[in-house]
Length: 201
Image (cartoon, rainbow, N blue to C red; front, side):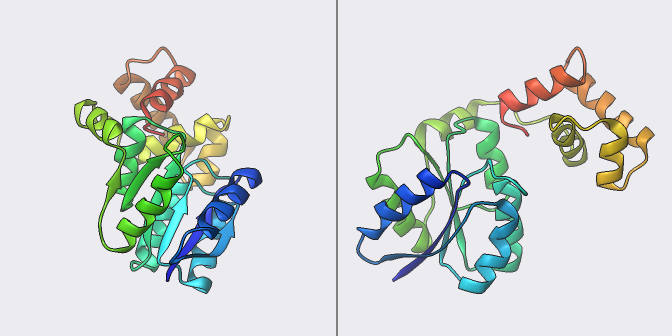
């Protein structure tokens, strides 16, 4: 029996996934959460074989949750199930140690097939997205610049970002200025827009 945990913030979609997987032989949903910051503690309690996670989660984004889970429960493999079909998002997912990346627009039967393949040690990646990722640019931003820009995307000003990240306000301003430069953006908001469209945030 493959033990599956679901991390999806939209209750209707999460319920549909539970119902879909309930009809699959050899697959059991042992836990479900609606927040990214609940992924690791819930997984440590239920010990799933596969985590199916959306990227856009409250509390902690799905890729950060997947990376943390990969460190604390490496035997649990991760399948990203998302609407974000952007090469940058796939590149970030692979860097977080996920085993699969499936788009929500895929046929329902592909989910169970993907879970089985991942549980058996394989990988599953949407082929069109994999090709687009191969051809796309890699983010020019450093991990710290990316995180500062991600915080700016929430509407936080430099002082608030500095408090959240335990940095000086001047350092945060430098990271933001560097991000604007590297992305050839007009300003901070334009840099956020460019990075989000590329899937780098």
